[in-house]
Amino acid sequence: MKATTSILFYLIWSVGSSVSGQQYYLRGEVKDESGNALQNVVILQPRTGYIYKSGTTGTFGITTNALIDTFQFSFTGYKPERVVANAGDFLSVRLKLMPAAANSARPYKLLSLTKGMFKEDHRKWFAGDETYVSIVENHFVNAQKYPATGVSLNVDRASYSNIRRFITQSSIVPPDAVRVEEMLNYFNLNYTQPREKDLFAIQTKLTNCPWNPDNQLFYINLSARKLNLDTLPPSNLVFLIDVSGSMDMTNRLPLLKSAFRMLVNNLREKDSVAIVVYGGVTGIMLNSTSGAEKEKIYKAIDELTPGGTTPGESGVKLAYSVAKKHFIPGGNNRVILATDGDFNVGLRTEAELDELISQHRQSGIYLTCLGVGMGNYKDSKIQTLARKGNGNFAYLDNYSEAEKVLLKEFTQTLYAVADDAYLNVEFNPHYVKQYKLIGFDNKAGALSDTLAVIEGGEIGSGYSMMGIFELEPMPRTDTTVIEKLAQLKLRYNLPHDTVTREFVHNSYYDFEPFEKLEQCYRFSAAVAMFGSLLRAASLAKVLNWNELVLLANTTANLNDINQSEFVTLVQQAKLLYSKKRKK
Image (cartoon, rainbow, N blue to C red; front, side, top):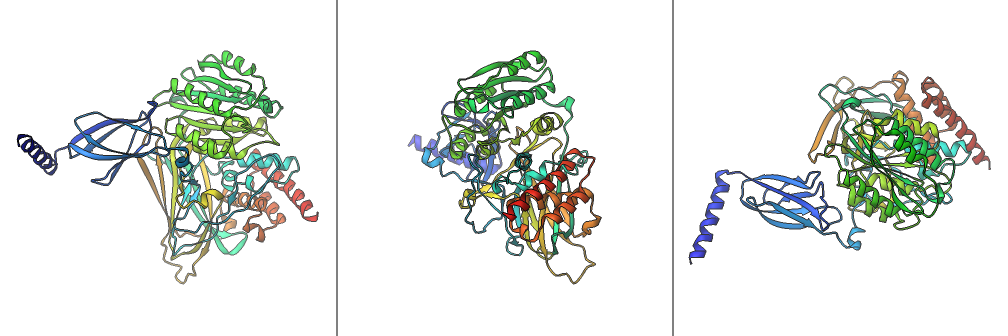
């Protein structure tokens, strides 16, 4: 009876405390069964519906008005745990990995998403021994029924340099190697420094569509703040280099050795580099070394020689282990994987690689992937690694590209200003009948998964994105009233932070004729047309190569070496694809 009275007294006191507004602070940590900290674990408080997330070291702190409360912990690939916690005690939670069968059912990630729409079938494409993820083109969407759509943001630009490699070798480009958003990313068009207090700047343009006079183009130009090189946090870099037999070609390992030497040249004393290799053996070629000891790092790079099989799994695991050992809280912790993607020992499929990298995604360690090679280049595998590893992806087809990615765009490639970034665009059905996102096409497998969700990407320092929608406008009778055409909401996390932030931009109906647009916008239309013709996309039915060559010539900034090269590439492609049609 005495015990019952005590319990009753405690319950009354607890409820009374809750009602009276007394605050408690629950502290704890979330780790896996091996004791590794898990970042961004979703912590649901069922009583209130509030959601929290664990930090970079797996720790969390939650303010609650109940001394004893229930919380649910969930994380991709792990079994959810429901825990009764006492705010007076430090809570330690251990999550268990799901069985392989459960992991294989994990939702796919999407590059763009309009909720509620039907998922389509797909085509398969083959390019010899090279592999590319099969993707499905976005189509027009009814704005009345689906006014909002989401777009993943990232700094990937591998597709353009890979396309260039095919065309300069007089080869037809595999359609699934063409990703229009990465082609636009390549040029970093119209960078605009954000206002002093903002991390981002957004500009929009509305104009007529050059390939369909009845439609309009809606441009979104997003720029991210440039970080000051002098104030950048220290870097803990691990070069993970494929030295297997397949890398024994001029445009593979020798090219990568030159690329890494350029990168090392930018490092400071407070930065550090370790080198892990996998090939005939997997091992540490250079322990973590200060960026001030450049000759020591150069020597380790120069001594790399190819040979053996490709044990990619063991290489990835060792590189992450080294990165964790030298982890810098608040620093730039990053594995830089350089490979042709031909993993032939250990994990081989995209699903297996997805599983491996997803386990490391929340560790606070980024992954940059550098693809090289031809003939057996595995674009699909490297793309999977980069996207799942909270990082970015570039393809190096020559020395100039290596210089562009690792020297000229050093901070954009290696320093993130935002994580898990995606843009939600909501159109006003009063102005827009239908809309179509150009590029950001999804993997066919993702579209067949009803649980698929949009995948946020990494945004680098000084990044500039040009996104394009084709719009079918509603008939307008009143041209004097200017209303909101669209609302843009950029959602993102700061690096090493679990709080989701939002940057809102309202775009009003302000039409500008195409011929009067700034040159960069007109040039981006030429890039989009080029991608569509190469993909044999639906847009290609109303395009022809002569129109594209003319637009490229009249809109490219010929003082810009990349835009000037684009014009040459378009002319080469015209001849190549014209021969294909004659055959």
